[in-house]
Image (cartoon, rainbow, N blue to C red; front, side, top):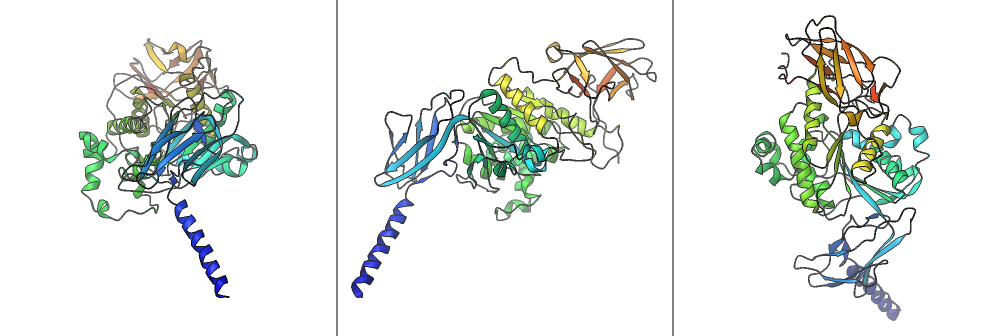
Length: 495
């Protein structure tokens, strides 16, 4: 009896010792089986092991492993080359990291294109909540697309860990994934015919300053004054930070960057898509600079060059103000548009698929597809893919008519409306700076306006109010971008 007990104790000792050793080698939680490895770029494999530990990293496409050693802080990383993805090749791959008898294996890997999807609720908006979910969810069976839903967290300091798991795209996994992200990825997959990896890491109601590193905010006088200093000088910055959600916490500077962006900065990616702005709608110049600073900081920290950043302009919404002439949200959309002054960025327009009294429009498919078309043209060099709607070029003012001209490359196939009616939401003003609705008709690649109440027109605006759902588009089906020809200052808010 005693001998049996001794044997049992020894067996459990071996089990616990083996389990303890198994904990010595840990890969980053970003690196998992089922993921998509970014093609044709150096791929970092990183994690933790006891200081001084020698490790071997071997991918099944490599002829020989590479050797690395854990540093004094028990961290290791190794960079391996990744081949170019071949169209239609969905071969499954494996990466093995080993040290002595310990081994971590990533399998069911695909080589393709990986994109980060981030922002607030309209990017988080789930596929099963969309207008056409009854059709789209059951059809979301794409094992060559892989999804990662990052868990929410907040932190005062940059984190390496993140919750979430890489999963094959199935109706069950896609239904709770970002609808915009899913349609973006599916369109890329359909056109590129290579595996697609999508990471959603964001949260509803979040403000842009939450995604910007603290030191970046501190280094810019405007951003420090508007965003960082008020927070650091206030009582909220003294609170203990945990992972629980509050509507206020997701607006605090730098906490989301530390917790839900920084963990991915070692991951090889192709680019970013972003849908955010509602929480910053009262801002103008500071928002433009804030978003540009965010983009530049992400590019710097991911360390993979001038990564593309494609973003979505906020949709029309009334904010419980029924006055159809109000334009404060239009001025914010203009501030968003200016973000694209930064290189390798582009804005997608949603004016035609918004719902004036729903902050979360349910028609998300066109938005994902427009983002994908932008990437196909600008990132993947498919120049035959149209991605821009009509963009204002200049206006000619006559005594009775105003002719609106668009940039030729945005109306190469002509103009139309999506409902067969006359173009809507055009306004004309005279020297008194009062805008009146204008009648509009399509004349070739131009719009001709008449406004009987304006005797001497000097300015024109299109969809430059808070909640116009538009119908003007080019014959590629892409909506016209809201614009104003004037540079008159924004009116002060009514008291």
